Length: 113
Image 1: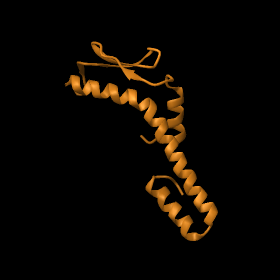
Image 2: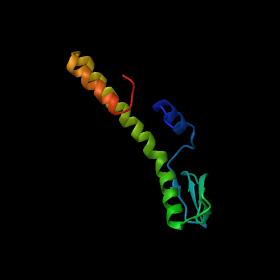
Image 3: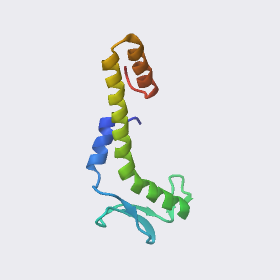
């Protein structure tokens, strides 16, 4: 499933605010900065195929979820910055070679030109 930048930003904006961290309880609980639980990764749980998910993997899942709250908006900001830079170059130069470079970059990023 592919999401647009706007859809990803909307998902981030709708999520519980603040920096998230992982607690060290019986299951790995992801909480925001005021201790509100936002996700839970049990240490022993069944995967979709019925096999157990090891404790180390559950811990890694919890750390990934917690870090994603800060990382995804940062990545979106960087993408927007780079897109703005490409647009500024194209507007400044306004010649065919720069326009072609922008099209190639957009294709590489999987965007419509």
